[in-house]
Length: 252
Image 1 (cartoon, rainbow, N blue to C red):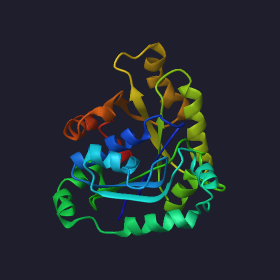
Image 2: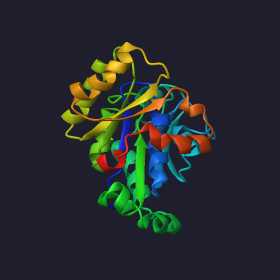
Image 3: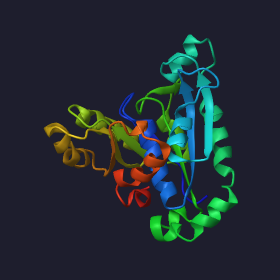
């Protein structure tokens, strides 16, 4: 694999990370890439229930899915482990399975299908025909374990980071803080995706389209429409590339 995985994080909980991840996956699949989706820690679901990575795969059609750990209570992962009386996650326990997953070859038919168009469409970083997306939990500094955040995971994997943000009033401060945290950790923030864009945006939302990239210094990569997660998979996959900037994969 020549391209690093991409970590998708957010400015907080319920900002639309899973659907934004699915949109990125669908856009990559639309140009022939084989997409993998990973959720290092899933909280708040019982065993056997579909998690965030499964939902992103359902919407996008991605076939490779990895969930490393699941905790029962709908809490931040560190708190969920403590409440359940379970050991805290460590960096090695999360990163080692992900590295093994990343090292697995993509299915041969996907690699052959994408070989002819990847270089032309999305640049030489993706000539191996794959893109792997890793979705964090909650906001950028939510603890996955004791003194362990998604930024530590991204650093260990040498991964660029995408920040999913809210559209409306208050998002400027939240998003700038998140981007600053990414950059303070020595990581590259590839850009921002608005996780839920209203069909009739108000003044603040419209102005934020200019202010978010101006204040953070990173590009706005796209806007996922409000309610997009309720679309059927075929419709979602058809529309998702249009929600993102045309060069989004090249930016990664």
